[in-house]
Image 1 (cartoon, rainbow, N blue to C red):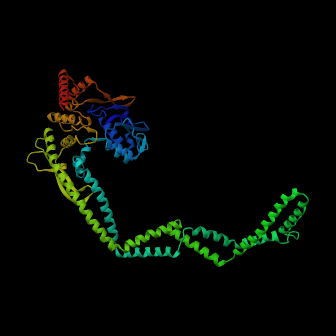
Image 2: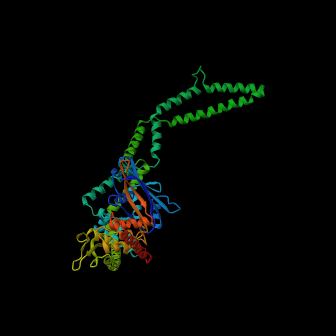
Length: 565
């Protein structure tokens, strides 16, 4: 339920806060006071497209905030899937702001959301019906949606099944279409896949090969430098080219001297042992140097082979993947694709059999869904006709017409259209060809009356639903709004006293000049103010004692009616 609305710097509104109550909330005011501005602000907050012109003159930005109290679990489940935090107290705050550049920002409980997410959320919270919203009744494509609201429980499981089957059905259809393509294109595809598979296979790639080849290339490219360096090291260690004596020979002499001296002084034994170890290590190093030198070869042919191998790998990476592993994975993938295409005839037959079987299942579900809709439609027709008669459309005949689509979809194969005859002797015709604005309002009200027990949207807004009606019809419309408001929170903008008197909470929208600017504001009416406002709606500018008595009587009758519900 809509608990509060806060509007700042929108249209003629500087800033207002309205706390709405349960049941029927009535908004009245003089023509031009700003009633339509309030609805436009709500629609903006719910996600309707708009422009920067809605910002109050002289201001840089505007904002509308709607505070809801959640009663159903469905909306909380949706919010969880969107990652939106849900307050423990059950309140949900929707806000939408717009700046002078025309850019708007949407938030739900403080978290930024897209316009699409906002619309999805708001569609489960509030339903706005104004003169232009009634045009949804003229959209034949939406009639089946309205009918399905009456069949929710009976259709729920079938809709789940058909959604799953239809998704699988379309996937199989797509696979069959790919197999039944142009023969030349199919052959070209086979040739390309075979070439790619052969090219990768012929390369005989190994997963760690590239790193190993890079190391080889580094060694082969520097083989001369390695050989020359080893020879120089060997010469410095063992040849007599440093003052005629090599390092190894000098260390040998040092070792002998330490040995002789340590026989004299035992404290020199550790130094002797150290130099002796060095001599032994140099001996081992000599062997290792000789062995390493033998492994080094300056082979231009081997160098060229490694370079060619790396170039081949780089070329394959450029075509098929960033790593050898990715290339091999790609090869595995296209081998499966090639096998699928080559065996397409067998695969196609298998898919077609699956296609036929799933089609049978879907058609069976379509048949059951259609039976449920047609059975429910008969009951709904009678209920809506009854309400229309009560709304002074005494001769109205309402009919839900069914036809079958050429192809089913995830909602079955039914095409539904609402037909009506408003006068005796007239044939049933589409709503667009027979219903006036006032009649359209009453048809919508009739639908909402019949839907009252099952409609899960908690808040309904009716913007001047009384257009084109008066007298006894107005009284009947008021009673229907009173009835609906026992099941849903209703917010209604009206200019008729019969509807205004039915209100449980009453707000008056007024306009005033302040600082050379026109400002709209909302005032909550007390009991006396409500009687005065109903009297104004009855007689206009001049309010007499008789008018006030009429207003009091009208209010009492409305209270008596509501207490009987």
